[in-house]
Image (cartoon, rainbow, N blue to C red; front, side, top):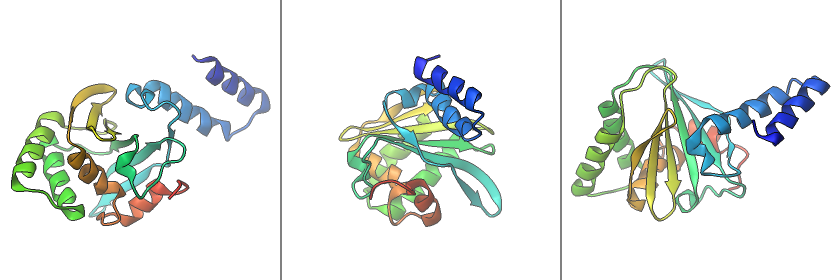
Length: 187
């Protein structure tokens, strides 16, 4: 255990502070998630739940660095973590992603074919508690992780902008989720 986390846990135990549990859970999540470790100093947003037709699909959370700006989000490193609450096929996740990407921007049929193929190869079938995390690397593209294991990436900044736009663009199909993810962040 890192000294700073060990000392914060000790301080919480001595002081008996209930709110410390939340801070320690966030610190532990950073240690437990190797994909987040690359974003030194990143802090998580609160989880926001996606429900479709009354069914819980996933909890989303955004990991950002201090000074994160929402207007040009694609120009900054960050991570978007999706913790699934039900079984879904990876191919279905890929197809739905393309539909949602089309909502926030335009792309060619050739791009759609390339991106859909890449996502179908990358995205596994998921079950309850599985996590897929996407890391945005400005000017490079997206790196995907599954339950702490690197899956691969799509090296295309246009893909990254539209993919993360599913959650962060003003034209998202889930504006309430967007607001929850961005709550408290710099604009």
